[in-house]
Length: 86
Image: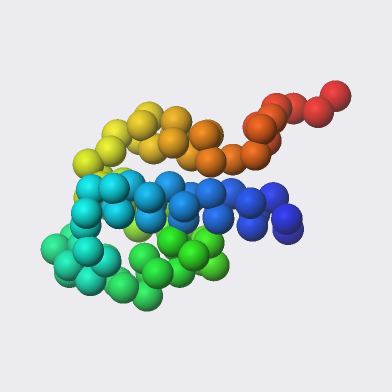
């Protein structure tokens, strides 16, 4: 489904941008937070539906609250993405 692709790519962009902004090296970040490199790679590329537990672990490891992550995600989604159509 196209909507799935849009949201998966947005999640990946948020995670990658925050990780890079905080200068967290990919391999070290995975190792220090017990996250599979394959899992993080696939999530950052928007190629994999993340288990909610993996997503929460990544959000916590990035030092974000769920609310902060939600705001960042909302900013990455296309305008009016979550707006209900009548």
